[in-house]
Length: 79
Image 1: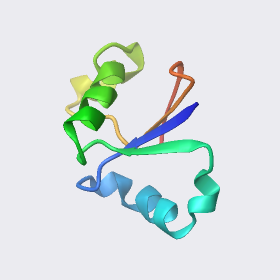
Image 2 (image 1 turned 45 degrees about the vertical axis):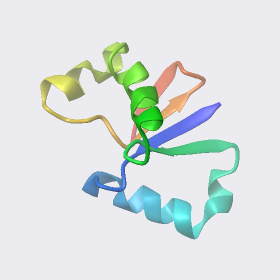
Image 3 (image 1 turned 135 degrees about the vertical axis):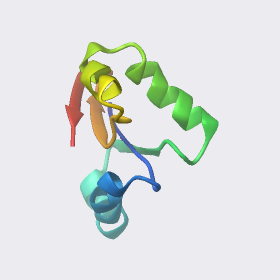
Image 4 (image 1 turned 180 degrees about the vertical axis):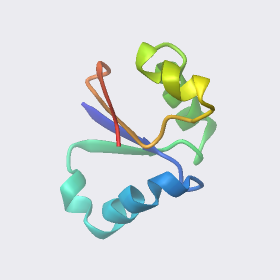
C-alpha cells in the first residue's frame, strides 16, 4: 500500500495536490491523504510521524514532514 500525506494548507504540497487533481490516473492504487481534512487523517499521519526515526530531523527543525510518501508502512520518502 502506498500512502501520500499532504495538506491543502501547505505551500510545499501545492504541486503534488495539483498533479493529483489534474492527473488522478497517475495516482491509481495510491491513497492520497490530506491531513487537514479530518482529525482521523491527522492522527493517521501522526501515527507515523511520532514513531518513526525518519521524521526526527523534520520535527527538530520545526517542519511538519509533508509531503511524504509511505510505502507499506515501512519506507518513507519525503517529496
